[in-house]
Amino acid sequence: MSIDINIDAAELAARLGKSVADRTAIEQLSDEFPGLDLAAGYAVQRVLREGAGPLVGWKLGVTSRAKQAQVGVTSPIYGFLPGTAVLDVGAPLDTSALIQPRCEPEIVFVMGRDLAGPHVTATDVLAASAGVAVGIEVLDSRYRDYRFTMADVVADNTSAGRFVVGTPVSPTGIDLRLVGVVFEKNGEVVATASGAASLGHPASAVAWMVRTMAADGDGLRAGDVVLSGGLTAAVPVGPGDVVVASIDRLGTLELGCK
Amino acid sequence: MTVTDAPALARALYEARRTRVPIPPLTDADPTLGLADGYAVQQELVALLLADGDRVVGHKVGLTSAAMQRMVGVDSPDFGPVLASTVYRDGDVVPLDRFIAPKIEAEIVMVLGERLEGPGVTVTRARSAIAGAVAGMEIVDSRIADWRIKLADTVADLASNGAMATSSRVVPIDGVDTRLIGMTITRNGELVDTAAGAAALGDPVAVVAWIANVLGESGVALEPGHLIMTGALHAAVPMTAGDVFRAEFDRLGPITVRVG
Image 1 (cartoon, rainbow over the protein chains, first blue to last red):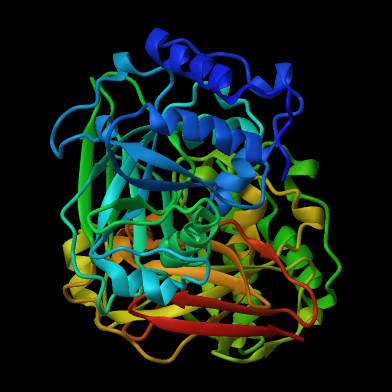
Image 2 (cartoon, rainbow over the protein chains, first blue to last red):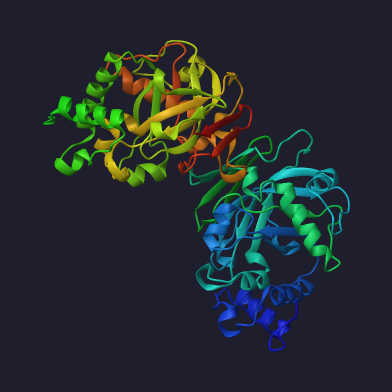
């Protein structure tokens, strides 16, 4: 893929960075830069990544049918997780630090060893994982009302905001495709799913990412956490809200918002 | 006070079932028809079907999700009988021409081990009366043209039940968090939807308690061996001849329905 010479990845990254700093949404970049394609989007994301400090892992986006329907696309995307995005278990989410936070339940992989290459399979992902855990991702699109093209959202690091990960358990003997997922907000069930909601199997979603990132020479490292994709539609949250993600065999994780 | 001519409306639905020719919504002719009217018609309709030799082998509970309740404008589930003539096995071919406008949905089906009679049935009491769960699929159908149903229409029409299929392995639910039983449904091998047990009224066991308490008001008990269909876990999927639907439940196993 060639990159539109009119698109200055550093300038676009700076606009997104300013949106984060100002806590103010911007219009989707593709409005002003119609030439912004997926490759250019990843180039912008790379600029953000280089300025983000130490990374703790990676995340997939747009892996569930619900999410694909929500944003009108058909294939997944990926982004990075900076250390500054981590929430401790039990600590509240400070919504005032974010623009328009939305939460979703995810299955999280914790890598036990490095994994890279263009032919990585779901089996490889499971074999290389030290554990799997319940996670809640807090999305925070820098684009007004989450209005974006695929290239826009890739540039915006796939709407990554914050995330929290529960206690990992061994993936051995767990069929992650079938584990039930229940997502509650303020005591009410807002959505249910099973692990298959992420690309048919969460490990398949991670394998897709590893194969895709291999083209840029990137890969997973031991200790990396990987958010394998939202399993339900994302739920908006504000001060006082509490969301709870329960995943059969993995556990339950609660996130309060202030 | 019910003003319905329940026997006549039941007869119209009975004929629609027999001929596969749908009828206009009962609520078109009488917009005042409500829940009680719906159940009055249902009772008459069931009497006609039992007179033909059919048998009640359980109950279906519908409108168990908040989304469905909003759509029909109610805040509680509805129910209807499961008739012996409508029960299929895992792997059976379900003939499309038996129905009018069928759709399929995956459900957890509870099998009663003990008699359970409301009122006053708690979820813990319900749980102890349940022998176990099986994987199930319900074929919903409407004898009302184009599914233009209001609450009274669907209630009168046996809660839009068409047929059901279940697996045969009754899995005890002791120690199982039924809220968290995961489910995938595929059509012709392609993933259509996923869900978990909590999609049915927060917990499929709570559905059994609910139906026991509601039927208990009329002195009707759930009997040992009765099948309780606890409600769709996902949006119903239209069926086409030749389709193969497969729902797989964590802990309960799969169920396949082939559409003939």
